[in-house]
Image 1 (cartoon, rainbow, N blue to C red):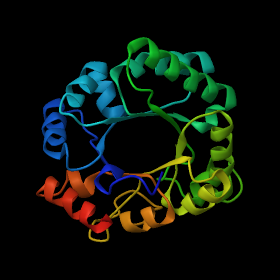
Image 2: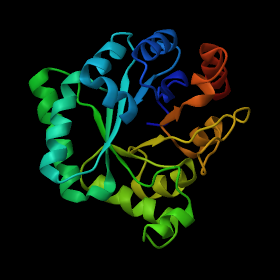
Image 3: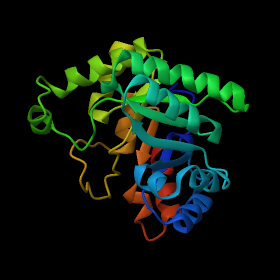
Image 4: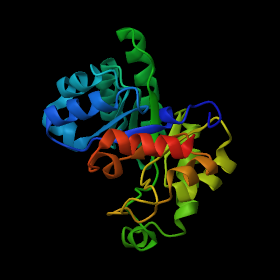
Length: 240
């Protein structure tokens, strides 16, 4: 997987906003420049499926970053509801467990077939990139972050899902444990010329790809740039 994606297709821009016009405008500008747009809970809470459809009309593939985490039946129903939107990627929390993830994958396949859309990648969040070892200890998850991430990734693969979201710092051990075809989506990416903001575990785009990441989620270095298209093009050039 990591060897077949073009540089621009590896990049998804995190459009974290409640401003629908801004999201549509930014997606329109970036369409064809990068691989897709990530729309998160903030956007989805404000605009729902209609907002996703509006942004998708720009031609940008959508990563719907809603991180579902609930009982299996509820998560399956939520995945079944969003799949007909034609999203490219949707995610759940691996901590929801094996059965929850299995049901999510089954629901995506069934709903995609019924709606006549491509089956989305259903991926699982391991440990949020905003968390460091101290944060993990605080919530009672003892042991090194790397071990926690690998264990959750293994559970995700066992459930039949497509891949995981993980910090770039865990790419190497996850790749080693899960093999070359398991998809790795990496947030917390910051070019060397951008600020780190609130992400505690970060690496540069080139570093992440070299370690084996498939898709890089990059937000503020693009969205807060004076010229978002130029910033995106600069990152693509660094990966080419």
